[in-house]
Image (cartoon, rainbow, N blue to C red; front, top):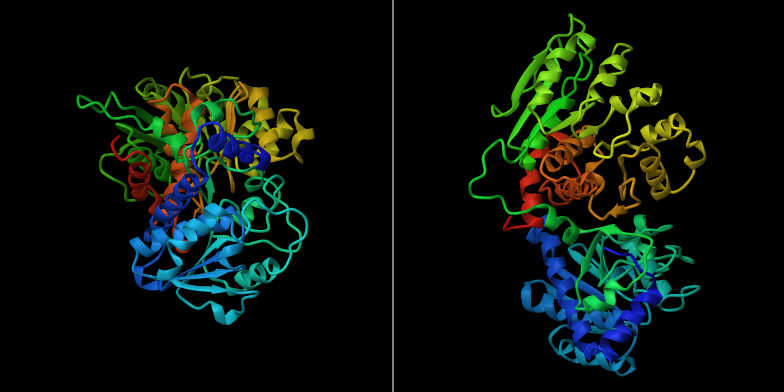
Length: 514
């Protein structure tokens, strides 16, 4: 999905109202009702119902405040929680559309005009909806917005921002003085550049985007250098499964990994591939690894000769090559280690004419000996920032080390003719043909050992059915992030072992009828 400037969004609104004939009040209602639905869904994933006592909606003078009044109406009609509105102004100071929506709700809720708010205006059990400023900020914060923002941030209560966290510049992601720190931001029509730049990613929290009915012909002509991968972008990848499918028609994945030091990683990858829908998953591990964890019986375990070393070497190759011939995609690297003998082993694996998802220490071996890498546009490399630095150095791209994530990923993609997934908060996926996208899903719960191994399995399963490696990679990153978001364990306590069981629910959320 294209990421646009504030001015581009204003022009889209203007054209939709003046040229296409959609009343501004209708656009506002769509924005508010869509946001309300998203808020209810978010709360059902992240909060016990008894924890939500009130929705406190803070409304400004502009259209963002109008969206807040529509959200208030939706939540009033669709939840049992008390609705409280704090407004910076009287209703007669609102624009026509905002005032019309405000008048539909204020008689049914607790409504107060406040020149400032204090700690006593918020309490445990509140969910704060930020509808103060949206993209309508330039320069320093003025009264009473500075007070509202400072007090909300100090409350440490959950905050959901409409369109963009109030106080944040919608174009560069900077702010003067302070801006709302949101747990989730629901942006309208298309995401704004400021959500991905500067302080934007840290301040906007989770990201959702609401379709408000901007005509397709206006969207198709937009110029944008940045793309954000959202749920609507992922849905086409999760096609309906034909009724006559069988295990060999929905993808066979071979996971090559593990060593006597790291025996669990390849199994996280393999189980994640199974849960993502691969029809058959084989996991090849050295026969002398320390132990085999408990795994689903449907996983095919292949112990490979290792001459008693507990890690792969050239002696492992005949068996591995036979397994690869029976597979559609290879996932290479989880837990594989960095022993000297692995160089020759990995060199031969990279020669296999199959898509290969390369992760973990396989990336580090390539960084140590870059001449073994064979450029291939079906390969997908999934480095974290440290691995990315080593790869950039290995392939003579040191100059890009201090560039932004998007530049790093794209330059490496083009250098080695492969898809790159640069992992981390707002992961970037890039393709050698110049396509690039920033992932919109994910949360701090995924900051746990083994999470990346699960991502490798998800991507491998998608790549077994999707010919376009870039699409498979971007879709896998989104599914992985969403699985973390919807975990019933919340933001604390999730471990990588939990992730595979959440993957099917994440995919159903994206495409329920697939």
